[in-house]
Image (tube, rainbow, N blue to C red; front, side, top):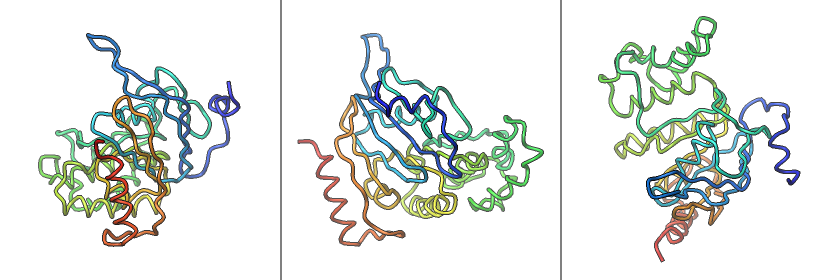
Length: 264
């Protein structure tokens, strides 16, 4: 066992904001009727505390599976995953996942949906003011008492994001949360997500198929191969925020990434 791997079993003091993330030689597979289906192949990386990283790659290659492993919802078949040097062995409120679909409780108002995590942890009474704070943060103060069926797709996704943010996560895992929105709503929420991350400085890991979205939001991009996924490229984005799609460097990076993703 290497010294780097040993650190995943050794507690270290918590950082004040984002969590650092460590993946060491992670491989994973699913059991099927015809045998094992490999989805991740010897994946290793480190994400610094407070960093925004995007995962790009072909559909179905294993990126969403990797987010589940980072959240602790699943455990890798091989290798180790840690946060702040402590091995991840299960879910924790400091590591939360936002899905592509809002998955709001249809019988609960926006305010009541945001309260779910606080209720589960038994801290709703003590932290009730957090709900109003997050409603303002995601721009849903006027819709606090609305039911999910009364919301637009963009508002429902804001509510889903707010439901996670109210728990003050230190690692925010985003599984294509804007993928089903129309172009204008998506652009608006990209800007707002960026502002929230800049204000809170939690660590963010975004799965997306949109190269422009990755370039607009992420400080670093990990590019994955087809299944079983392995990292084939790591790209730092040398642009200040806010970024412009027409920036020559942005355009060149987009073309470079697309060329690397194209079938050969």
